[in-house]
Image (cartoon, rainbow, N blue to C red; front, side):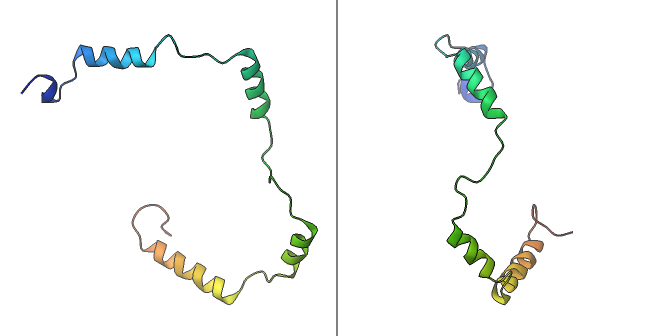
Length: 90
């Protein structure tokens, strides 16, 4: 078994990783890119496409909740409550 196969990290391994992170051909953002990123950072998220008048009317006519949807939601909550990890109901 060689030293590298033993699981130890050598100086050469570290040098390779450092060189990979600091390669001179990596690009730096231009002033134009930085300016665009600054503008983009202050954009308020919103829906890409607003609902059409037909969609708005259909949403107003639709019931708030159906019995089938309520049952499915309750079943999902119960199923999730019995799962270990995230999503548990305390």
